[in-house]
Image 1 (cartoon, rainbow, N blue to C red):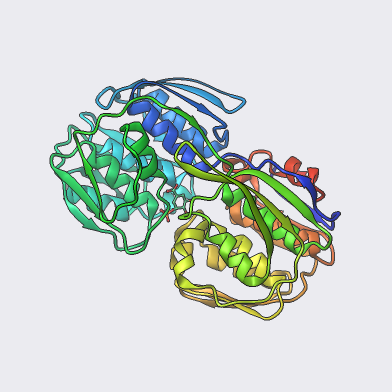
Image 2: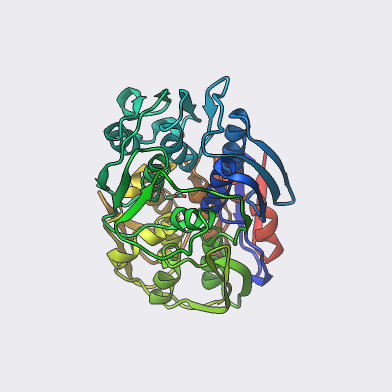
Length: 433
Ligand code: S3P
């Protein structure tokens, strides 16, 4: 689909099973590949980003069966069993694949070249190259951008590293490199980011996961194949949470969504704004907290988003901005400059699109102010960013007329059945080739 037209739909009603979590899906493939023995994964996300991670490991000699209806069997080659790929590893649009693999591959006996699409080639890699170089890796990246040329063989040593920014990708890259470094690698975060890597690492190491700060990793860790089930992606659920809140008379149930506390701040933010969100059936699956979420329409008020929620809702700000536009009063988002280095500059993209749809905004280096109002009909550019495209598709259900979102192909990276799932609960989306 090159664009999506979102028209005024029905109230949202019914049950929607959101796609599997992208972050956890990537990690299941990575750890499964380097573990001893077989890892079976159910409910893996079959989005393009995760398929890129699977393709990369296949190129490095790992036999992976599937995905078949979300089921994957990974025949782990063991921590030293990866082989040099015969060509560059093309990671498409996926920053998670590139950053996590840079850490893993920095510790191998062979060299690798990591590349990706035009968006990925604009994303900053100095944040991983610098600490990995301190560990003894040799990585060439012109101007700190992809492609990354990782030289082998590596002789890594442990470091203690204080992350200059809140980034689970950088943290995870260093933990993966730490598996191949002599000594004990220590990572200190400025604020806690999503901890899926730590939880999964503990599971593959046969240990009980317990939160720790600072994080420490030894090269002695033995990883064994696991049986994993991936929860629904809270980042994908967020689109429905906002659309159902804004569209009157809506009532939607989202079963099996991951609500790891380091990921679920969008729930706190929307509740602070007045959303009616009910959690039930909380349970633990493959070391992750999972629940069913019921959301009903509610009137929202603007808020100052508490800065301590920013890192744990970082991917949800495009759709939080849509919620803010449908709220009364002003919502202020600050301390969120990381939004400028995502798949697009998400502050600039949201400010531009909201303005085009008649919403008053003020842009700041680290955020934006949004004054609640009424969406007009109009066209917006998603800048090739899946989350910008999906966020503006939610605006269509309460706009004065259709909203057209261009450059929406990358929705497939994280939410392959976006249009059909959204329409099944009452939205009115049309794909345009
Ligand atoms: C991710 C971490 C976040 C997030 C991205 C997925 C991960 O990126 O935005 O979509 O899976 O670790 P940063 O680490 O750059 O914040």
